[in-house]
Structures are given as C-alpha cells and as structure tokens.
Amino acid sequence: MLISVVIPVYNESDLIEDLYKAVMSAMTKFTNDFEVICVNDGSKDDTLLKLQVCHQRDKRFKVLNLSRNFGHQSAYTAGLSYAKGDYVAMMDGDLQDPPELIADMYKCAIDNQSDVVYGRRTERHETFFKKLSIKLFHFIFNKLSNINAPANVGNFSVMNRKALEAFLALEEKNRYLPGLRFFIGFKQDYVDYSRDDRTIGEAKMNFSRLLKLALDALFSFSKLPIKICIYLGMIGIIFTLIGGAVVLYKKLTGEAITGWSSILVSMYFLGSVQLLFMGIIGEYVHRIFVETQNRPVFIVKDFFED
Ligand code: UDP
Ligand code: MG
Image: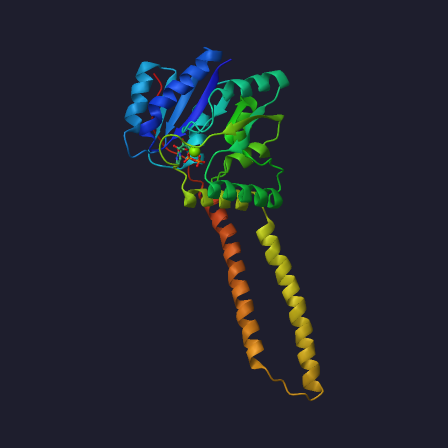
C-alpha cells in the first residue's frame, strides 16, 4: 500500500526544515511505503532550493514546482494529480495540522473501509477574528449550499484511489476542495483533532484570499443568489401592480396625486436593487465564462521525481 502525502507550500522557506523532519518521522513511524509530494506554488523566496535539498536527502520527498503562484487549492489539485499512492493524504505545509494524524486517518480508513477520512477540528488555536470569520463562513455555507458539509473540516484528509479519481474528474476551475470532496460522496469518516496556530511564518492565505475562497465555495455550490433575485423580482412586480392600481383609482376618483418625493425615492430604491442583482447575475455569467474558457488549473514547470 503506497501512501502519498500532498503538501502545498508558498513562501515557507523558514519552515521547510521542520516540515521535512516532522513529515518524514511521522510517516516512517507507521509505514515504509510512502511518498511526499511537496508542491512549490510559485514561491518567491528560496523555498524551492530548500525543498530540493530535502529531496536530495531522501528521494521519497518529491518536489512538484509550479510555474507561478496558482493558489492553495490549485496547488493541492496539482499535487493530487501527481500522487501515485493507493491512499493519498492532503496536508497544509505550515504544521498546523499534526502529521501524526495521517496514520490515524489511514487506520480509520482501513478499519472502517472508508473512502475518505477527514480531520475534524475540535478546537482551533487561532486569532479570534479568524475563528469568527471561519465559523460564520461554515454557518452560511451549510445554510446555502446544496451539499450537507460538516463544519470544522478543512483540507486535512486521507482518500483512497477510488475517491481520488472521482475527485480529480471534477474539472471545474473555481475549486473549493472540501466542498468537492463532500460532493463526490462515497463512505466518509472523520478523526477529531485540535488545530494549533502557526508557530513559524505568517499565514499565506490572507483575508482577501480567504474571502475569494469563501465566495468560490458559495457561488459554486449554491443557486440561492439567483433564487433571491427571482423571488424579489416577483414580489416587486406584485407590489408595483397593486400600487399602480391604487394610483389609477385615485386618479379616476379625482384625487390629485401629491408626494413626488416618495415616487423618486422608490425609483432610486428599485434602481439600486436592480443594480445589485445584475451584479449577482453577472457573477454567474462570469463563472460560465471562466468554465467555458477551460484553462488549466495549473501548469507544471518541472517535477523532481528522482
Ligand atoms: N499556500 C499555497 N499557495 C498559496 C497560499 C498558501 O500553497 O497561494 C500554502 C501555504 O504555504 C500553507 C498552506 O497553503 O502550506 C496553508 O496556508 P495558510 O497556513 O496560509 O492557510 P490557513 O492556515 O490560514 O488556512
Ligand atoms: Mg495555516
């Protein structure tokens, strides 16, 4: 049973050494048959150099170098498609997720015959603002999306080949991997763990990147924004018709219409509502555009395999 561990890294020069040691020791403790695929997501510092040094030390530590920064989710996708393992683990490179848990998730998959086992965070040691926004995202996502995804679950997981093939067969470009992983179905289980804060370096997923990911997740798994648009439009039309009838009645009975300001205000109001929802439709149109463009999710520059 070959086990692959896929790890994306971006500007993580300071922690490559620790990462290498932690992953290699956690893996050798429970198997000899493994490979680590570290994906360098277009780092601008000397991350690649350090990865290559590690690769020279142990050939099981492989380095996949992307041609530029494609983002966290694309880097994972790249690594997953190069993984040869019968079981494949996804793990962030910042050691916030304990590599020792891969053994537990793998055992859980074997014992329960699960196809996907993910790590469920019982607690997170991160800043208050980050925890709050992540909670809020999971709450909204669960309410709006048409998949029933558990909260407190990220990328950290183990999958077997069958699940991985299904996962990689999804070729959409705006990728929210935890969502896609639930979307594929199969038998899914979880192992609980507590997530530490980063000890080395800063989070590379800054607020705007996380926001983009959250929007990708919402827009690619929910039709609700369009539905709101349609419902509000229908309600608006009904109210306008009633209002029109009232005005007509007053006109016919000879009462003069005063209060132009209220008319102007409601016109502006409707105008803004229309603008807002044109934006929402525009978002979907844009997504169709991106999908039809059919650009690759990643372009590999080189693959340091042996
Ligand atoms: N990462 C990446 N490409 C990016 C941003 C981040 O490969 O464009 C990597 C990063 O080096 C780290 C992992 O993805 O190994 C998770 O990033 P981070 O810790 O910043 O995310 P968070 O823990 O805040 O979700
Ligand atoms: Mg992190």
